[in-house]
Image 1 (tube, helix red, strand yellow):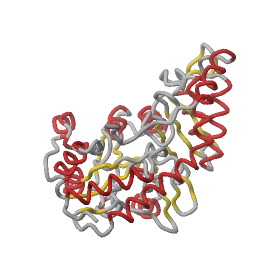
Image 2 (cartoon, helix red, strand yellow):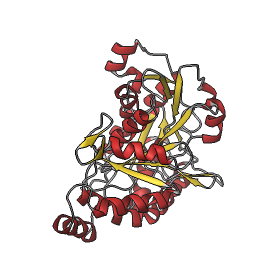
Image 3 (cartoon, helix red, strand yellow):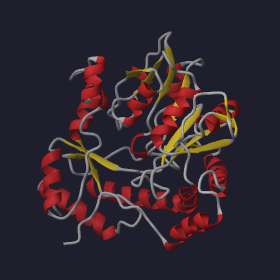
Length: 364
C-alpha cells in the first residue's frame, strides 16, 4: 500500500544544482546567495530588510534579544510548538500565556492583557492562518512591540499585507515540513526597522562590527550559503505551492463541511488569506479517527498534543497546571492534521475524505 504522508517537501534537480553551484563557487558562509535570498525574501514580504539565520527558533530568540526584552514579559499563545515559548526564556524574558480562540486557533486578542512589565506580544499565525493583528495591536497598545511568529505562514496575507510585514518584526522557519524550506534548518527575520536589522545582523554573526572586533555578545547563527541557494529556488515556487494548498483545503472543506462530527479549520475570506501549512480539523474522537486513517494507509499528525504551558519543563519552572488555558487545552485534545502538501493529488484528498466520512458513518 502506498501511504499518504501528512507532508512532503519538494526537492528538484534545479534546487540540488543551485546548492552544488553555491558550494563550488561561493563562500560557504555568508556567500552571495545568502544576500540575494535575503533581498528576494524582503521584497516578497514587502519589508525593507530580511536577515537570514540558522533556524526559526533562532529567528525568534535573536529578535527578542534585539528588542531588549530581558527581565521583562512577553505574551504569547500556549497553542504552538514549544520553541515559541523557549525563545522567550532563552532571551531572558518571562513567558506570559494568553488563551487561544476557538474560532481561529490563534492568540485571542480579548485575552491579551499587557501590564507595566510587558515588552512584546508574540502572536503565532498558527497553521498558516494569520492572527487578528489589528485587534492584537489595539490590545497591546503603542508602546508594546509586536513580533509575528510567522514560522508556519510564508505568504499568508492579512488585510493586504503579507505575514512578516504586519508587526514590528516577523520570524520564519524553513524547517523541512514548512511551506518552503532550504534543504535543512534555516530561518529568516523580516522588518522595516533599520536599527533592528543592523542589530540582528551583528547578533547572528558573533556580534562583530568588523572581522575581529565585536561590540555585543553575539551568536553563531548564520544560514549556510548552499541552503540559501536552495531557498531561492523554493521562494520562486512558493506562491504556486500556496495556491495548490488553498485548492486542497477548499476540496477538503467541500467534502467535509456537512459532516457534523468534524469542524473544518478557518478558511479565510476577503481580508485574510491563509496558506494552510496544516489542515487541522476538530473532532471529539480525534484518536479513533487517526487510528482508522492509519489502518487505511493515511498518515495524520497532532499539532499539538501538549500545549506549551503543560510541557513538563514549563510546569516545573512556572507552576502551570491543567485548566490554566482551557481553550488551548481543548484544542490540543481535539485537533487532527490531515495530509496537505502541493503534490497531493485530488483523488488522494477525496480518498482521505471518504475514509473520514466512513469512520463516522457518513459515507456517500
